[in-house]
Length: 251
Image (tube, rainbow, N blue to C red):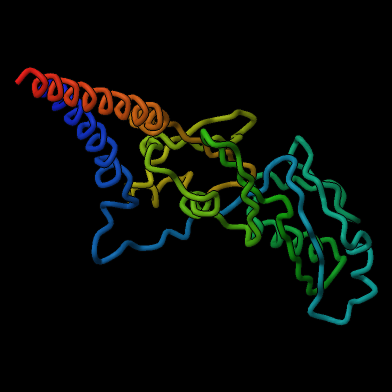
């Protein structure tokens, strides 16, 4: 009977050790970050994609208020990029904007306005109106709205509430539409290698999804294990009390 009781205690300790070992070795973010830090990579920029919503306004450094009116006639209305990557812009007509960064689109507009003689010193302002990232895990889904038009992989994880101890760090997927195809790329936030990954800077409408690790078995079934262990412990204790009482009664 004592050996059975010891087995129950051993099993309890084993489960506790197995679950606690996840926290120290498996979940630390950027565990290989050098003490001297790492340079910031500024080469990543968000580009325009089909079905984006863009707010575009045209200004001027000169006295051209009347000339500006046609280009701002739809103030407050966003421009929807069609499936071919084009928008219909006042006076200039159809513009192919897919693949351009916000700054490149601003430069393109200004160049066209000057070259075609519409304005002498224009300034264009472009803003993404639909920049959001979607996050899916075993607990549900979240929409991360990005206001400053720049969102990194780590920032999206933080805004979505982070990762629990039982999420696989080595297979956090990012799904993105590229050239008419949906592709999936995996990132590991434990490594500083993500800083040089092209998927580190997220694009609008990216979908982040996670997988549960094998240790989630303990998390999901801990209550069941606790009930079973409690029952076995109580049964063992009652058995020991019975044996001791019977032993005393025979003396």
